[in-house]
Image (cartoon, rainbow, N blue to C red):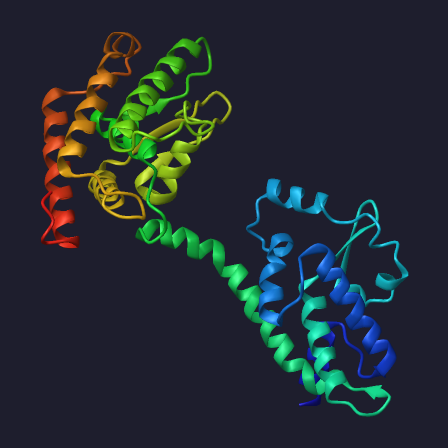
Amino acid sequence: MTGEGESQLEALGLPRSLSRDQAHDWVAAARRLHRETVGEPSDIMNDLRESGVYFNPVASGTRLRKSLELVSKEGAASQLYRMLPSIWKLNLPENRVLLTPEGIAGSYALQEAIKHTANSTVLPRSHAAPAVSGLLTQYSKWNRHRIGGVVALLEGTDKPMQYQAIGALLLMLINDNVGAHHALVAIKEDGSRRRELIDEAFFTASHAFTLGLAPASKIRSGGRQLIGGWIIGEIKRRLGSNFVSTTEKGSEPATVYVKEEGVPAALELIVRDLARGNRKRPSATDLAEAFDRLVEIFLVQRGPLAAFGDLHESPRRTQRLRTSLLEEYRKHLHEQDPARDA
């Protein structure tokens, strides 16, 4: 039992005992530092959660840099913060300092110890366990967040795929970019015109599809690029192993295609994500019109695409896909709302 108590103190950077005045100073410094970098302290779990703006491992580098730029440059130079345990703070360049999750949990343990101590010496050990439990709970949530997000994408419980990405995936099925033999290829040598044609054909058609379902949609940055843009990443995250997106390796160009065995999963993903989410669900009629417009705009590019060997569309296959798409979509709508007129 003693060993467990000691390890809990160590995890929080707390000594076995300290004077009441020193304990008050540490708590006051920690709360002030929290206030300056995150906001007004409230309770241990909320404060730990809010510290994720800096310490959540899935925070994007761009967002983290912006957050760090707002941290005061006077922190580390302050004698008030120098006295804190090293595990409670993270010193940054330019005299910036952050209160760590361990500092948050340790300060709450110390507050409880002060509250329950009447004499001049504070013994934090008996109050360390709840704080360590809260700290571990928060770290566990952060650690599981990324894999939880990936699983949610694959299971279709996260936000639905954007219309432009759905349009691009439909185009890959329409153009039979299925299997490595019909992969879309990012040509490196003397291929800039070919690459431009592929990007333009997929963008203009998928954008027309998007506007057919959501007329107010705006073009996202990078939306004009197929290979190298955000669209392929959005499809890959949801289709997983059923979708192949290779990177450039030496003389080998990047390639993108749907696996042959992944075509049913791709169609299921499209239908599922069209029929769910917080956006307005299109009617089957709207979807049919948007699909027809998608094909029409794409085939405007048939000549140049065929000249480069990149056109694999077959009217018969496109008609089969259209029929399957609408049948499955109507079935999905009926399952969600039997009274709905698709």
